Image (cartoon, rainbow, N blue to C red; front, side):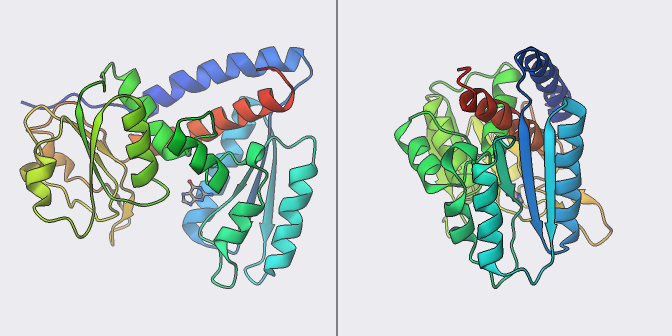
Length: 285
Ligand code: GUN
């Protein structure tokens, strides 16, 4: 039997439709959400991501600024720009595209972003608030994963969720968000013994390991929900997930494709975070 496909593209359009309505309501109050994106250097993938973010802002009627800086930009100059954006009233959210060139310390830059404008949810204060369950700006991809599961009508309460991957950007925060939804969470990573055996116990399997087509049907319990966060560029130029979609869909329950699964949700959640930051900035929540 072939599984139901969870379309991130469709869910994304639904959420953007709701955001557009809120943007109109804010406009009537004289508020326009503003996002600043900073790109240092010429990494081709980053250039595409930044263009997509700029387009999403334009489509939703946000104010947007993109600062493209040369690869040899000094850390002090980047920090000065972040500081200026922290103080700029028209800007509600700041995103510094990662990775940064090697001579710049990412941690110093992330820590310099005002907590209330940290729409990536990477600042240690936002991460800490996520850990203790307080209100915070949530990292976009993990928030997108949860939203996708919920909007597909899947309940997480009491389910066994297995997360494969322990990165700060996806694995760790997504496991915290799954716990917040009352799932029982197991984390696996590159040193996990018997990974397939553990993965086969999952009702919900979230995969974020960055290895193309790594998860085959032997990792999946029949009927399990499979969420693929992988985005791997193959030698032939095609995009592949971490899950071998063709074999896994024969045994799994609802499954996300790549492309068109988690990917579109990331920018949508960035737009959502910027809207939340704008409402807070103007005392509207
Ligand atoms: N590079 C790849 N993913 C991301 C992300 O979510 N945020 C930022 N700032 N850079 C990235």
